[in-house]
Image 1 (cartoon, rainbow, N blue to C red):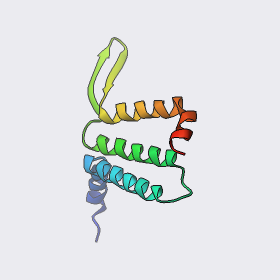
Image 2 (image 1 turned 90 degrees about the horizontal axis):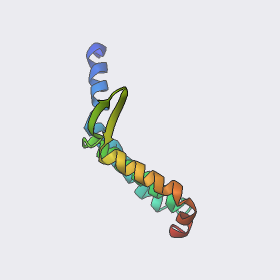
Image 3 (image 1 turned 120 degrees about the vertical axis):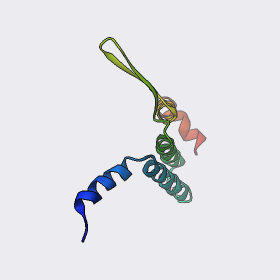
Image 4 (image 1 turned 45 degrees about the horizontal axis):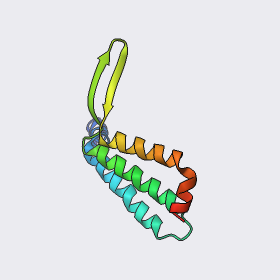
Length: 105
């Protein structure tokens, strides 16, 4: 018989662990690689999928946040590698969206 009282907390621990996010990020990067071989998938979409996978992988390695503190009533957090990478690349894609069509054509 399955011991549900033990299985559910263990599953919750696994799905919040760094290993899970590293595996999920690697899987998304793999799917990005598979999508790049599809002639009907736009390469800008493949780029975004791979960046999402890389951000999840970096989140799993522990670079999700590197500092946290409070300044009066404002809570401040300094983003680590995954957050900064996702933020910078997301801004770049949004800002240069029309130029990306020429790059990935």
